[in-house]
Amino acid sequence: MKPLHARYPFLRAAREAVEAADIDLARVVSRNEEVRTRALDRIETALDSGEIGSPHRRDRVELLSYPVARVLVSLIDEHVLTRKYARAEAATAYDRLQAEFTETTELKSRNRDSLSIQTVLAEFDMTDAVRETADGYAVGVGTYLEYATEERDDEWRLVNRPLENGDVELSESELLVLVQQAIRQRVTDGLPLSVPDVIAAELEAECERIRERLADLELTRDIDTVVPDLFPPCMTYLLDQVQKGEHLEHHSRFAIATFLTTIGMTTDEIVDLFEVNPGFGEEATRYQVDHIRGKTSPTEYSPPACSTMQSYGDCVNMDELCEEISHPLAYYEAKLDDADEEELIDWREQNAASES
Image (cartoon, rainbow, N blue to C red):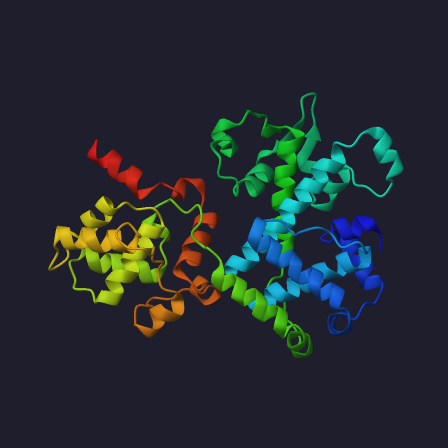
């Protein structure tokens, strides 16, 4: 096992090295506490900071912690965890590759165990789609679209990129962003894994710790986009009931109001939505919404978890994604992440356009 494999454990060569060593993963999990600890650290750091933490001083431990981390993610089997973990692995790889490619020639000569950008492109079958130019690289538009869809900044929209003869012009740093997305896809590929019971039993304590971390995780950071078409089925149903003027029980009104405040809707916007509801009173509704958002109370309330929604009978019309998550906000965040740019038209922008 080489240091290169420990730095980039998603490489085919790294997987082959593990297979060639005929390593028994159950034995590793049961007897190697260092590997279990580092695997847990990869996941916890991914949740906390979007990276995977400092590498272990021993290459063998660092490399083996990667498949064990994937096993832990599979045992938890929560969409939000899988996504955040894969992104963290890819983000760390991006930083390492960028540092490696900007090393001086002298440093590279001292470290023969390194990657070239050509090797990386070959790893992800991108060689034929990428060619070097005088100013950087040209990437086939099909490959560009495949890997650039996760990038939300306007600069990544195809209409804003130089396009010539079916190729998109990119700098080396931008090309590595596409590679980062290819890495994310590879890390995610195959998850969740089928985990033998004997391994699952050995990792029970680590799984419980991750579940506790997920329960405490602030799922709502940076969500400030209102796209009703991407709402979880429960919130879509409650909002539809509001719009139809149907009577909602207190727990149902609380659920939809906390959801809407949390994703960035103002009190005025929510009051306007509730105006058609029977028994609507603007002053009372405004007070309740301000109370929920913490403006007139010491507590800023969060939407109920899926288990609470189920207990009150507000969990309706479940779909496949509902089976993978434990909170309506996790559902919405996942939908936003997976949506195409054209789908992310904020409800507020649509209203403003229709009124003008």
